[in-house]
Length: 140
Image (cartoon, rainbow, N blue to C red):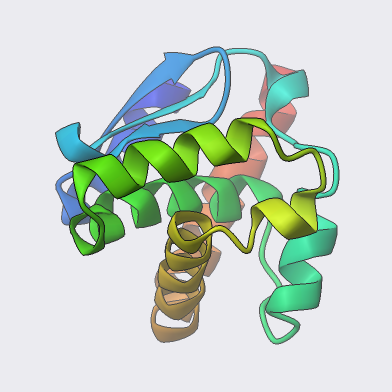
């Protein structure tokens, strides 16, 4: 099964569609996320250190965290006005420190949503984590 199909099956309960792109990204208003085409871009420098610091009780892969973080943007987008969302995105472009970036309201909302989902659905997350790991390892 292709990675895109696997991610779309994982995201189906949320009404979110996944597509290949250059990087991890959410088009929250369209309920669409993008994941990197290239395996070497699956991991973002400092992301997991930040997640471990902010959510020490959660032990899941960066790949699953990243998918659920982007889905989290789609699930929490409604909390912000379009103008506020755009302003936060612009502010985020200027921030290089991952810990500071994760404190932006829309990033924190997405991370909190993902963390709550992981905590409340441990069996589903573990199952998909294993499937994704096997697929990623086969990709080389």
